[in-house]
Amino acid sequence: MAAVLTVDGWSVDPDPYKLEFGLMDVSADDAGRVMDANATMYKQRIAQKRKLKVAWRMLTATQTGAILRAFNPEYLSVRYWDAMDAQMETRTFYVGDRTAPLKWFQILDGTRYEELSFDLIER
Image 1 (tube, helix red, strand yellow):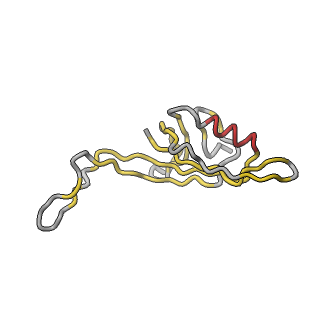
Image 2 (cartoon, one colour):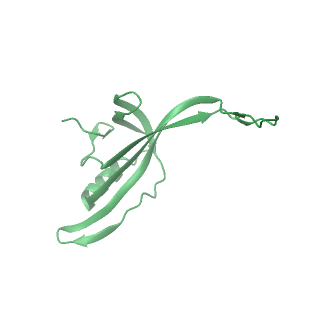
Image 3 (tube, one colour):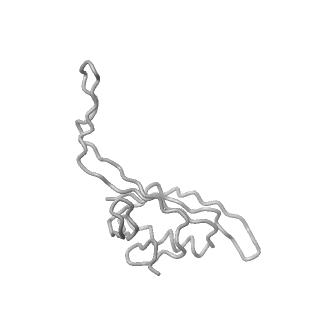
């Protein structure tokens, strides 16, 4: 079975429990409200960019470290299922806010992280 998510050719293991597709519009610098009687808004879309929200649960310290290292470069080639195009695609992304929430606790077989999550934003 093919990996749900690959980054720079590395199959992310384990698969994320959440891979949420998002589509963002990029508007022109002069987009916005016109001061007419209706306060008309002009979007002036110049591009669309994908945003993927990814998250994992109950990872070991080793798995967490491997995922964080894989997603550490400034730009990444990510292969994922694209909801809009209904197929696997490869696009260039960067990782959003680097303060990905990590919560940990001790269990019998070692440290587990409750959740690791972050956003991937298309370049």
